Image (cartoon, rainbow, N blue to C red; front, side, top):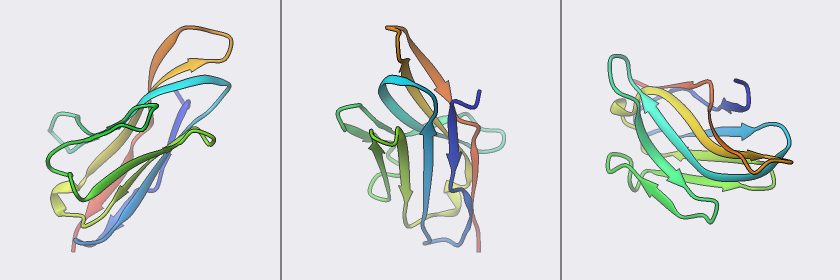
Length: 121
């Protein structure tokens, strides 16, 4: 709760762009894989993109070529650049990350609060 904070959602027209941000708070020893999910009303929460701590990325077929996931390890932040947006991209977007806190060897998984993305003309 409150350990991953998202921002950047909003309303855009088809073909437009948005960039989502998700920042991890607190004293952190290491951040593992970071992920973006999305969930439309009445549908399952599906993975959109992932990035390892080494920068290896993977994308869902539905967003490949349009979305780019990246991370800034100094700012402890993951981004999702969304271009050529379609109405089908409308959903609540959630970030997710594996974190190891300073002073521990314990890894835990955390979720952001979600941010609404609406693509409509």
